[in-house]
Structures are given as structure tokens and as C-alpha cells.
Image (cartoon, rainbow, N blue to C red; front, side, top):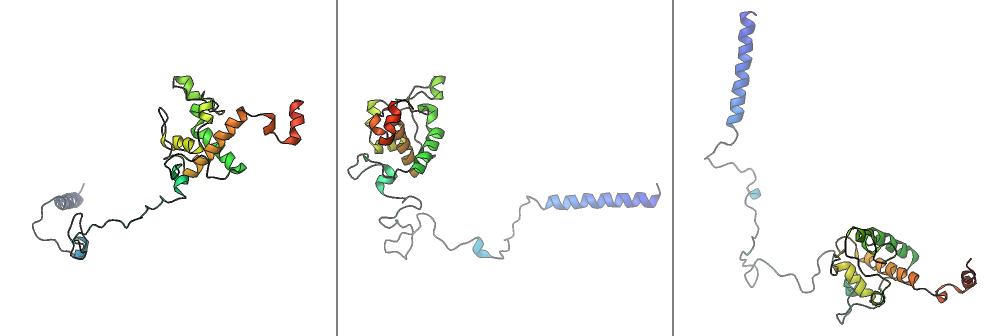
Length: 210
């Protein structure tokens, strides 16, 4: 290799090494001079901190209470009975506030099979797949005790849980919980139906086993 090429190569190596030292020297080194603030308001914003005093208000406090009756965004959806299942007397409402429709019943069946059937089974007898793995079986929907529950009570159990059952309010929207209540009632009726529950024009076919 000629001397000029060797000199050029060493020159590039020296330049690269010097560049790396300069870059390294720009990181993490203390700087005693006051920094230049192009936009000072980004560092010193005109605002009140928590618990800070303010001469603007009569009580001298910058922190204000929400006006009486304020409801958090997303919290007001329907009446209190609809959102909580509780009536003005503080007791569970007797009747489901959501209108019963076939599409709603189908939605309730879908949500029930997703969230509830694993324990309660698809027919509501309390023998879901999880009970075959040692989980304590829940009561059957077809027991008289459960059949006598009010719609509001069932809604509250779905929402907040009871005993070994967790609450499903975070997973299931309010409207879907009421549709599940409708479907639970349909399951109960299907297992305790009589011939009078069948449309009159179909009763003869039922009696004949057709």
C-alpha cells in the first residue's frame, strides 16, 4: 500500500474517532449556565396547583367543588331503576324495565351463553362445564327460590355478584344485563310450562305429539 493511501486511511480513522468523542461529550455533561428559553411559558405555565390559594374566589381556594347535581360523563344512562335495578324504596324492582322483544331475547341468549352458561349451563340447571372441574354448583334457575326472585334482584346479582359469583358489570353493559334477565325468565318458563302457555291453535298438535 502506498504511503499516500495509508496516510489517507489513518486520517479518516482519526476523523471518525474525533467525531465519536465530540458526540459522547454532548451527552450527560453538567451545564452551569442558564438555558435559553425560546418559549418560557412551556416551563412556567400560568396555572393553579392542587391546594393552591386563589384571590379570585371568595373562599380563597383554587380547587372548586362540582356544582350540585353534577353527573360524571357516561354515568347518566336511563333512570336509577334502569341503571341499578333498585326502586325509590331501596328495594329491587319487580319488573324488567326493558321491553321484551324477540331480537332482545336473542341478544340475551347470546350474552347468557357467553358469560353465564359456563357455570349455570345453557338450560340454567346449575350444571355448567365449570362444575365438572370441582367448582361449587350454583342454584338452579328452576328452583322455586330463584323463580321467585324479582327481576331487579337478578339484575343486581349479575351486576354485583353474590357469594362465589363475581359481578359482571365491567364486562356486560346495563342493557345487556336486562336482556339476560329476560332470557333467564324464558329458561324458567320453558322448564315449567303448561299447555296453556302454548298458543291455542297449536295445543291440539302438542297433545297429539306432532
